[in-house]
Image (cartoon, rainbow, N blue to C red):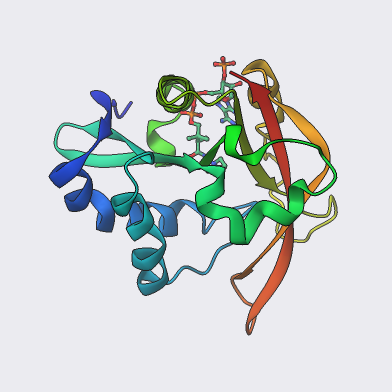
Length: 197
Ligand SMILES: CC(C)(COP(=O)(O)OP(=O)(O)OC[C@H]1O[C@@H](n2cnc3c(N)ncnc32)[C@H](O)[C@@H]1OP(=O)(O)O)[C@@H](O)C(=O)NCCC(=O)NCCS
C-alpha cells in the first residue's frame, strides 16, 4: 500500500510553494463522485490565494516523502461570508465563533490509514487555539438516483458523525460549478454540518 509518511500544517513559504499542488489535488479528487467537478486551474489558484493571505487559515498537507498526496484546508467562516452567510440565516448562530473546515482531498491509493482523522484533528486544534467554539463544514447533496452515482460508493456521513458533527437543520448553501459532461455551471445544494469544539 502507498504510505503517507507525514501530515503537517503548512505555513509561510511551504504553504505558498504547495498551492499549485493543492490545486491539482482538488481537481483530481473532486472529478469523482459526488463532486464531479470539471476543474479549472486558474479558478483554483485564485480560490487558494485566500489561504495564503489569511493568518487564521490553515492548510494541512499529507506527504509521501516529498510528494504532496493530500491536503485539507480551513479558515474562519467569516472569511467566506459572501458565499455562506445566507445559509446560516435563522440558525441564531454567531458566525464569528465558527471555524470553517473546507476541503479534504487525498489520492485514493492513500486512503484508509487515518489521514482523514488527522486532517480534522489538526484543523480543530488550530481552531481551538484561535478561540473558536464551533467547527463546521458542508457536503454536496446529490439525488439518490443520480446516474453518475457509483454502486459501491460509501458515504462519509458515518465518519463525520463519529467525529461529533451533525447536520445543521436548514443550513444549506448553494454553490455553482460545472459538472463533467455539462455545458456550464449549475447550482448545487451543500448541507452544513457542525460541532462544538
Ligand atoms: C475524506 C478523505 C480525505 C478521508 O481520507 P481517509 O484516508 O479515508 O480517512 P481515514 O483513513 O482517516 O478514515 C476516516 C473514516 O472514513 C471511513 N472510511 C474509510 N475508508 C472508507 C472508504 N473507502 N469509503 C468511505 N469511508 C471510508 C471510516 O469510517 C474511517 O473512520 P474509522 O477508521 O474511524 O472508522 C478521503 O476519503 C477523500 O479524499 N475523499 C474524497 C474527497 C471528499 O469527499 N472529501 C470530503 C469532503 S471535502
